[in-house]
Image 1: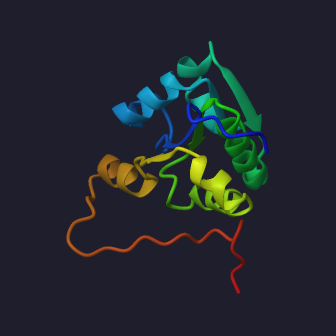
Image 2: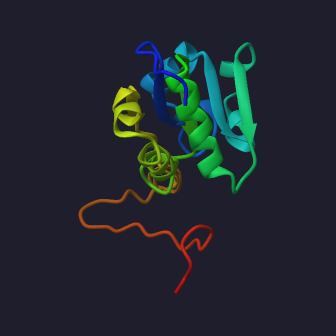
Length: 152
């Protein structure tokens, strides 16, 4: 990797379940302040009004680690990077691939990445509010997807 530039940063941005109405103000600000926005093609299409005048990089589904590595590299090169993910970055989002990419760096390089995580609205809470069934008191949310974690 290149010598790290302290002005570079990597912001993991949860964009919610779809549509600009589900973005938090902090998420929108991070996207607007970025030099480059990185994301899965569909997620970028959902926020196109915010990024149409920006440099953005589209990645296909299944290229999560590559997306994370490119984002880390650009942050080390001094760019302000917003890596967008559906829902929340830490809930079945891009946080895990980013932390994996950071583990692949030297200790000094990893420590020099200015990382911020901006949470996002998750589909479970958004859909509960739309159908009038709030998740009150005790509840649990599980993913039944086997895309990255096999059922076994």
